[in-house]
Length: 112
Length: 110
Image (cartoon, rainbow over all chains, first blue to last red; front, side, top):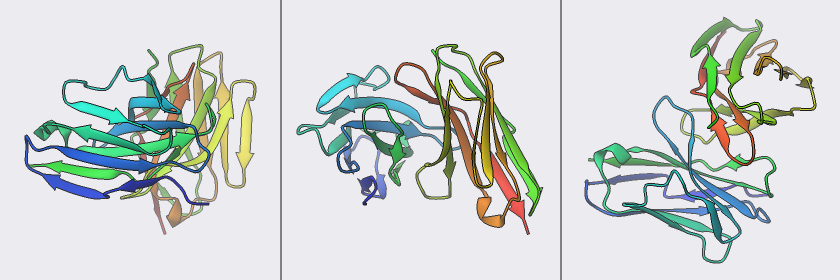
């Protein structure tokens, strides 16, 4: 069974440019999460979807970050415009309801 | 909100020794406590978890214990091997959100 798929794995952009990350969850998992992981820290939740509905986006900086999960399967996280402080690893995870969460490999973003 | 403290931040052991990582949490409503292993350049991998109605759980060389009264839980790895070297994260979940500790870098020397 395929795990959580994320792309790209690495992205380098200049500040003020837009960037997008894509995630495909484990087949059948209706809950999808986007996390931010800074160097030397644990993951921090940005947004949680149940099917196509964003049920917890309280930690998403909505002035520059947006996310969508239009058909309740794959999801896209966007940053526009990117800032130097956005350099981090962006992790996607999925679960069946509120059961165990399984993480993808992450996208390492570097903003120069 | 929930706050999870994890200790130590780094842990060095010799191959074959045991390793113990400890976490405390603040929200008494938390009822699910997973542990993740993260290798360099990879996403966190779930290695074991425990729910609040259980005090201990084992899976081969790893075990987790939970003390709900004291609000702390621990990961125990026995007979450590070099491939156990990684960053380990504890987490706690109450209603729906996982809150992670800051991680423990475990180094197992041959």
